[in-house]
Length: 188
Image (tube, rainbow, N blue to C red; front, side):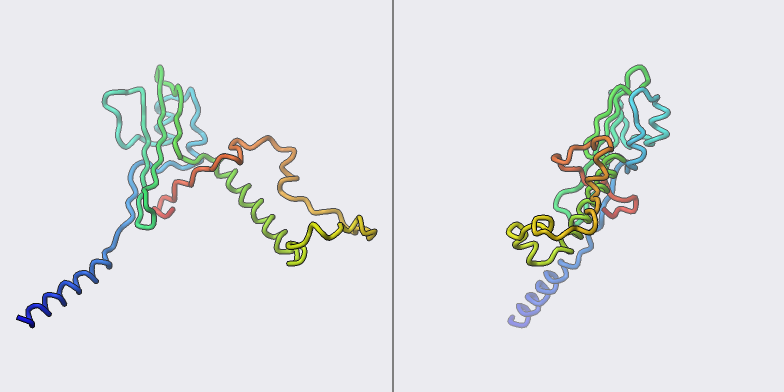
């Protein structure tokens, strides 16, 4: 009887330990939309132009021919909730009337992310060049021009100075940008 109980416990313990070794695969469903294609989508385009640019929607709506929904979903064991994106194109008189974008990145979003990344890199490099004393007590120390020592070189331009003459960003920096939809291989 004891031998049966020990073998049962050993079997249950082995099954419990093996259950943690289950492979959970990444699941990618729907239409993966490339940001360059989404950026080219404009009002007034025909259905065939939209189909050429974005492809055919995965699930056409049988009850409403004036609407195409492009869904994309990506789930992975690394993320608690699946990544969901949706682009809806509404047609009127066989032409695009309006577009609803819920999370699909456009080229402007990617450009803004690139600018933000370059600014963050420049700011990090600037902070790394300053010494510990300057970073900690920089406000208490007088500037070089106030102390009477001449400055030999003008200050370096930062990316924000270079952007002063450019048009304003399409996405205000106060709003969080949507995360990129991932790559065609399924890796976010």
